[in-house]
Amino acid sequence: MKSYSLIHRGVLMAIGMGAAISCYAGVEGSGGADTYAPTPAWFMSLDATKRIRTCTQFAPDFGVERSVGEATLTEAFKKWGDYLITKRIQVLPRNYIGGHDIYATQLELLTNCDGSEDLKVYFGAKDARVLAAKAKYVKPYGFVERTSGPDQDWGKGFMYIATPAEIAPSPAWTTGSHLLGILLHEAGHILGNSHLDGTVMAADIGEHLKYSNERDYRLEGIDGDRELRTCIECGRTYEGMLVYGNTYSAETAFTTLTGKAPRELTGVRFIKKNKVDLDGRHGSDYNLPEGKLIFTDRSGSHSFAVKSESSVSTMSIQVPLFLRRDAATYSYGRVFLGSLGSQNGEVRQIVVNVNTNGKAFEILLQDGNHVPQTLFISGFSN
Image (cartoon, one colour):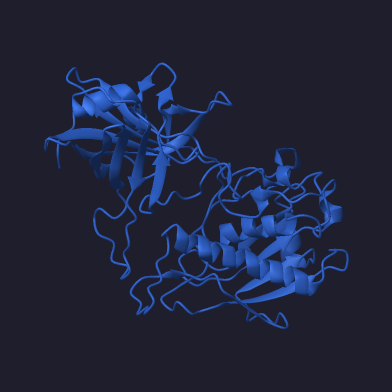
């Protein structure tokens, strides 16, 4: 591995601390979310076609017809299935042979609950085990509980969604996107996700369910103000900022890379390469971003190859440079070490910061005085 002398405060933060994600928030005052200790995904199989045998039970005062509730439940699991594939967490080649576990997200809805089901969903209905589990929380909107051991790839368990009367003040489940939101949240736990603010897995998801009768985009998808999972290997174009306060100048970056001043610089962008791995055999560099940094002025386009060679951290970390403009809080990101190929053939050491809150992208270069210079930073695009 190459030895890098470039030290950036984002890198220091990556080495020194990880992002703390709380899995404990369940009282009414915290939004009514579940108190959840994360467990492995309940339903994993080498068979990509295996379905989760699911049954439902509805309370008379739940307020939603069985057909509607089951359709929304199916939609929630389908959204997760699509998300896992889109974010490259799950790769399903066209001719899938097997070889690695698949997250099951397709349901087989049963007519009755007879004990043979993998997952039982209580839409407001209660029995002894629901009441025992519900006693752990204070006015929860919903929760899940696994009844099989965590060492089993294919487990069993149940989900509970409260009746509107139990969680007042709150809209009926027939309004807006609230039922879909709570089902997405609880299905996310079944798939092994813990809480993460800014996504549908937020610990205080109950705050988005209170008082409103309108549709809420935060309850209709998985990513929200923040990405639950950043697809590093997915292609994307980041438009760069021509001026960034007093700390960054695109003109200075252009001069640093080309050795001459730009002729009316009109744009800068980074085109991240889309990496395709159809056979599911990820190479060692699959999850490392690479692409082209392009500056454009009146003389034409000037392209530089960007390649990441290692990751400082595999988890989301705090990168202080990505301070949100609208709040005195830091957002999160990942840090990579890599190289940039210049026009004269010189290879330079760089740091790449990928932000998972504002979805920003940054490339830094060490200058002759060992000071990190920002070559590129994109605008925030929530």
